[in-house]
Length: 307
Image (tube, rainbow, N blue to C red):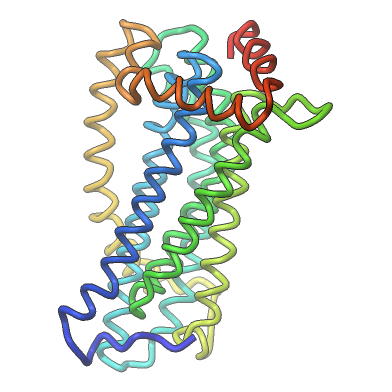
């Protein structure tokens, strides 16, 4: 894949070529999350509240992913601009670094996520929903972090369209997989609320595979690749990633403060914070039209069971 040479040509032209696909991709990322909220609302208010507080915890890993993307975009971009020939080494080391960080993040998440959820919630159905949801979603951490890191390599080459295509495809995949995994199909009744997490895991794994394919087909990765850790480069990547991640984590802490003071008001307050009541009506109508009434039986079943 030929890269866009950002060292020559019109600067406003480069801005337009990179900013527009990024903006479109972010729109579909937002819609992706809206789909999750819609289907959680079809189950119960507690499910929506569980979704809200579990995302607050998972956002820590998302922040690390943003940091990795910024770090690799900067380091690979600098190597390309300087024509040093180090871009392949930096990119391959960055992917290896992302793999290690994602596995570490997944392990730490499994260990400490329940304590973080307990900090911003009260015992009850919505805390139980959050713990079960995050217990499955945490396995999507490598997909998120590796995809973000790899996208930084593409961005350094002027390619923001790949992530745009990935986000659009993930949105439509999530739109189909959510009702499939929640409510099932035919004789299979699905897995309820955890179907939202499974849908995210599957669709984001697809994003990761696609972005890695684009990276390995790109010009930057055609040199000598070296994935065995080189600690001097790992330190450079960490030095770039930590400040960028910290800026996102500050926003996460602000969200934690809000959720902490809301916890005494129960799950309904989390639901109202995250979405409007009308959203649940729209979602229910869409599902009933799509499933010819079978979804109504399953919604009632999950609500009787508390989810």
